[in-house]
Image (tube, rainbow, N blue to C red; front, side, top):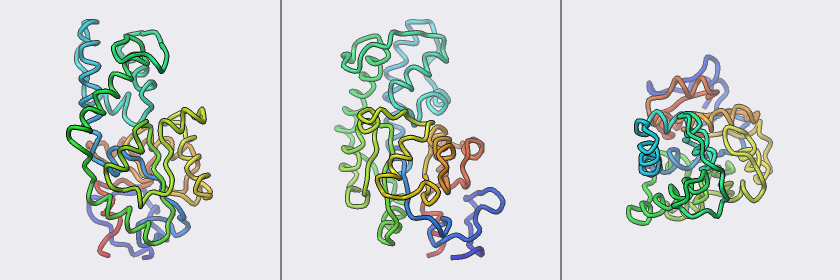
Length: 262
């Protein structure tokens, strides 16, 4: 597919972005695709949002603060490592908690304890309800993988392996950089680009030859900061303009939109 690519009406791109693209809506030079997990490949963002709300609302009430909102989720915690999300959100509300230790129990009123409490609720929800794979994303992932384009998942979640396995996507994902990997390697989380860059290294691909797929503003910013050749913003919450402002080269509602009519 060349510059005459037929772009569906729900795909928006910066002027000139879609020149010399291949049949996957990516620059011809692209050798690897680096996918965020929650909200890009799997429909677990709502589960995360609900778990954050259940954790934050009692804490906010104790400080006479209004409840946690969808805007709070997108602005402060979406796409970030748990402790960073806790710290950034509470700072935004003028609330300070001690950092604590990663081993803090879920009931501890520390940054780590709040993060662990959220993770406990998330795991309970996933065990109860399972993982929903986004059909269009699975189609796209399978298409690029079968075409020989390298694939990796880059997620801030420490449950990346469990979610990928539950989603049945293991055979389509070559490498995984998740929260456990980042902690082990002392890598800062999104919006810093280090985790995406680590995934590119694992695949043996230069960032300029890789595409990043993200629904979170922090993740899009990480892709742009890392010098990646193409950044795809996936709009799951009516924030197309914000994704573009964060650095997305193109914004789609669904990854299958990039396949056009093929």
